Length: 306
Image (cartoon, rainbow, N blue to C red; front, side, top):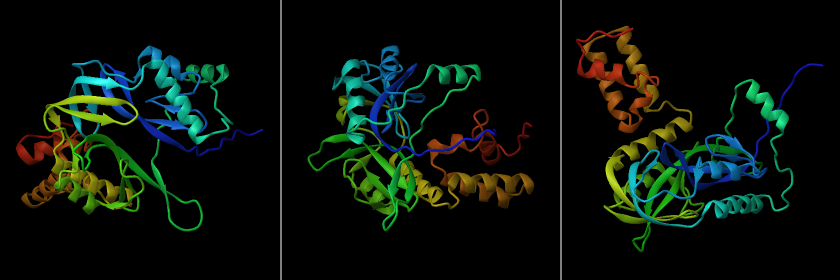
């Protein structure tokens, strides 16, 4: 007998939750129709309560603590009215699974044999969610996307945290709005008009639907709106299979290393400036980040360490 494997696509939804890994991180918790839960690791519906009891996932953040929101910044929780305790949040997850799998059939349960197998191999899996939309027309063709959080101010002045998803067809969707499709340019106009923001205006109550109401204070560690707009534009290019700012900057860096000159340095400078500030750390590896890019642009007489 030969060894084989197969891949299976399982659909689901995301809901807000918080990871407590030294600090607190607002995440999009992936909940799948087979009961699998993605929380920076893979767990099943039966084991999720143990994840909550360990405190790895939590439905609450203590007052005074810092809450990080990827792609936006870090904020202090001044006060909050949380919707769930541990038991209530576990029930919320179960109800979410039931909403997308009413019959509760084919629910995944991690066997002890599977645990032993992966423990022996020292392997851990995640079930990272991939946002998608269905391509119009016949068939069931998925267009992949990438998603993050954004602050959204409604017509009544209320402030919300909602999902902003960009897809491979260069359209975007706002969770608060539903299925309306936006172009990247239209999303930019929503930033310009103050509908979309990267931070509250001072200390302000923010609603996170499905989690609670939080009074957040900006502690100065945030992404500027103009850089977020750049990120969304570049994300649309990358998802569509075109060269995004990071790829263009890496190519400009390689060109300079192959042929150092004022001309190639200026070419690199323009490419570097096009990369959103908060994403420049991804130009290199985890250790070097964008250090060699900055060396070339700002200290060109320094020798490169190899």
